[in-house]
Every structure is written in structure tokens, then in C-alpha cells.
Length: 487
Image (cartoon, rainbow, N blue to C red; front, side, top):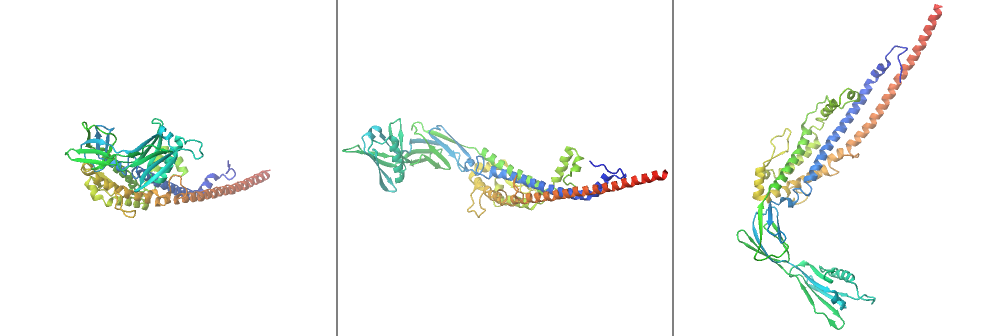
């Protein structure tokens, strides 16, 4: 605590404060400028955060993203027997009704070797055709050291090893229920086949031939047109509908499948995408076009003391306004986002999506006519799908759908560590970006200015203290002389 001005009668504190005021203002100005850097960095980071959240939600092949082809299914099918046949419509499927008769499912080639048969066998020979060449796989049932027969687990392991080495798709498994080893191909249909011969000294068990069976399915549409399906698969893609057969049916009771157009969920996903896109652009445009009132600067500690909490909040809101006005990086981002739509904007207009006719503060935003969009989806969902997710012809071209074009934009401008904004301000917590380095450097300079200010203040108080001491001495001397003269 300083006590001064007793001898001179001067208000030393006020004099010191007034003397260092210009230096205090320099420190405050430096701090305000650094506060502006920190504020702008946070504003940029808020935009980066919103942009990356949009990218994660809409530009990655996640559950609800339009990038997933499965989310473009516009026709839903219901089966009178879901345990025997299911149908999944993809983009382009029509709401057709079908009658399905499953006479036979495609099966694999299989054979069983019972424990009793294996007990009287010295060698298992399996003949399989791989790539047009017959190959024989031999497995001895006795252990190599003559200590007895191999266990079922040992035989299964050896069979699978030798079958795999031969290039065959046959697998061996042991079944506790059937008490034996089952051999089965992964391939279905009549083309799948192999033979098994069990041999021992002086006796050969009859050859076992295993052969798969082709599927036999008859599909009739609502016009009475018949499509016969035969072959090695229990699934079929027909008129953009994927049929999966899982059980035979009774010819007297064929399965009825009903198709129904249902574009509501798909329309809602497109509307949600457009709304989120507009929300992101609106946030960026707000920062680009709001005006800056230069009389509002970050508050100094003394200014903050004289305000209420609500006044401080309002003031800081005013300070933030216009800090990113006409910012080059944000204008480049908005321009690139608009460019992702430019090549297909004419076709987008045909499905009800058009640019907003307002370049003042809604630059690049879109309007959407849900009725027109819904009708376009009902008429030709495939064409709408291509507008959004058609793959580009190459990495260097921009002739793909909107989402792929936006992916390229966000990879270049937002998601990559070399993106201009990432290098400039970094993500939350990053310290290696340009702004963080500037802010840290400024903090060091401000700390040095504060040190010098305190030193200057101390020096002034020291000078006035010496003056006080000298004046006190003079006052004492004067009092002494007065006393002497008066005597």
C-alpha cells in the first residue's frame, strides 16, 4: 500500500495514473487486437464445426444418408409368405404385383460319411472338378504312427486343409446329430458335384455321388407375363426388384407379392438434405454480409467493471458482428458449394429444387417444392437418384451427382488438414495453425508490455517518493528555522 502526497499535498496516484495512461492505452489496444484474433478464430471454427457436421451427416455413406443406394428404394413389396420369398425394391422398381411358384430351391452338392462307415475305412478319396480338371483328395483314417484311427476332429481338420489346397469349395463338418462327417459345396446348382469313395483292404464301399440341384421358380406379373427362373442361385434381380427365395411352395397355393409406391421417406430425406444445406449456407452468409460497426471493440478490464452482465453480453455480440464480412476464405467456400450444383441446376429445377432469388444474404440457398419433388420420384426415381449420387467418370472430373461434387468440395475446403481454413485457424484445440501462433506471439508481447508498464509505474512512484522525502526535509528545516528565529 502506497501513502503519498503528505509532504507536497499532491495527488500522486492520479498524477501517476495520468502519466502512464497513454502506455495503458497501448497495452489495452494490443489486448483488444488479440481478442479480435481469438474471436475471429472461434467464428471460423464454429463454421468449420457446422460444415463438418453437415459433411458427416450427408456426405458419408451412413444409415440415413442419400449416398446409400438402399435409401433410394421407392417401392415397397409385401409377401403373403415372408418365410418363402422376400422382395426388395431399388430405385427404378415399379409397383408391380407378382404370383410366385417355387418348385425347387437351388441346393449344394452334399454327402455324409457316418461314423460306422469311417470305422471300416482306411482311405477317403474325394474326386472334385476344379477349373475343368478332376482332382483327387486322399485322406488316411489311421494315424501316421500306427497308434490307432484318427478322431473325427482330426479327420475334419485334415479334410478341410486338403480340400482348400486343391482349390475346391467343399467344406467338411462333424455333426453330433447325424454321427458323422458331412461334406458340402458352397456352390449351388447342378454344376456343383463331387464323388466320395471309402476304401479299406479287400473291400470298397459303394461310390457316393453328390450333385446339387438347380432352382426352379416361376414368376408371373399382373399382366400374366411369365418369367421362369432356373439356375444356381436362390436370388434374382428382375425389373429393379431383388427376389430372394428361401423355401419351396405348394403349387396349389402360390405366393402373392404386392408392390406399392412409397416415396415419402425418400422425399423426406431429400428435403432434410436441402434444409440442412440451407441452414449451413445461411450461417456462413450471415457472417459474410453482416456489417461491422468499428466503434465496438473488445472491452478492457476497466470498461467491463462498469457494465452489467447483460450489457457485456450485448456489447460482445456487437463486437462479433461483421468480423468476417466479405472474407475471402468463406466466399471461396460458398462459391465452391454453389459450383457443385451448377452442372445439374437445370435438371434440379424440373424436380422442384431451385436457387433462391436473393443474392443479398441468401446467396446459394435453395427452395424446394415438395409436391413437384414427390411426383418426380414417383415417375422416375432413378433419374432423381442420378442427380444426387451418380458416380463421377473419374477422380479428375466433376460430372458426378451433387453429393459426390460436394464431397470433393468439402474434402478440399473443410475436411483435409491442408484445407485453407484448417491451416488458418485449425480445429478446436489445435495450436499449430496460423491464428494460434499469432495469438500466442501477441500474448508474449502483451505480457512484456505489462511488465514494462508496471516498471514505469514503479519508477514514477519512486520519483515522487523521493520528492516527498526531500519536501519533508525542507519542511522540517523550515520549521526548525522558524522556531529558532521566533526564539
